Length: 233
Image 1 (cartoon, rainbow, N blue to C red):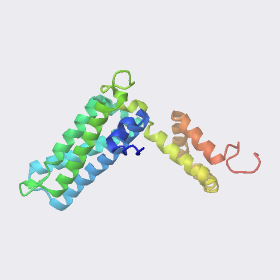
Image 2 (cartoon, helix red, strand yellow; image 1 turned 30 degrees about the horizontal axis):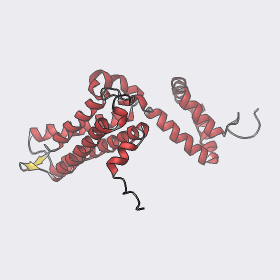
Image 3 (spheres, one colour; image 1 turned 90 degrees about the vertical axis):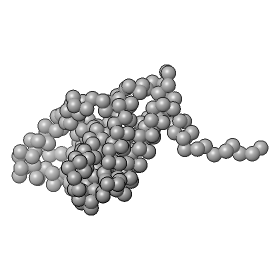
Image 4 (cartoon, helix red, strand yellow; image 1 turned 180 degrees about the horizontal axis):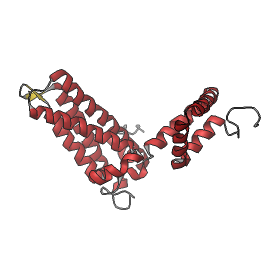
């Protein structure tokens, strides 16, 4: 009996779990945001400003790339402002249309009356990302009837906040480097003693983000009550 033919990438995406697909979308959009911002900055540096129109388009490219990146980072301090002014991003369909709009805007980065190379590169990559988003929300089973997700739903509901992701990364690093984590903790305590305003800010952050603070503490202390080793005084 012959082996079954290998699955294509699109089939693998359809068969992936909803959690994995949402994660892939987020990573793709974060990377796309960085690409758009980089392309906009490079266009300013290498192409210069040939007209007010080119200046405006380049500025909007950088701004919208930054918006996409910050949206996917989901920083708590910025989320209220983003929801108030750019509410259309908080749906899968709205976000996809926004990415498609940025792709067309990238193609407006011109030099000598024609689309620049950086405009083509960022525009095509952004268009492909928009098609990836579109494929997922229209073809993945999770977005079909009974699948649990809706195209008009909020894509950030399954996200961890940027602060939580940073805390998780810090926890992993601390677990893998316990000695370095203890040294860092001692240094942080000494610095806080010398700079009480910084210590106060750290306490306020811990109060506002108890889960992140607890994870960081557990990782650095190795689960003990004393993060500096030895017996408690």
